Length: 54
Image (cartoon, rainbow, N blue to C red; front, side, top):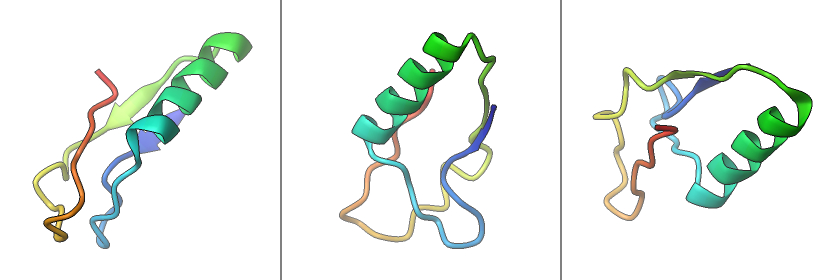
């Protein structure tokens, strides 16, 4: 399962809760996660915080 966070070109970030849900789902389904976080510096809203899948 490939996750792109934050999204390009919008800079929209996933919430910590969303990330935890995705990780739990992948674990239950025995899926590998590939986190593409190359745009982590492209968050344009000061109210948003980037959370890594690490």
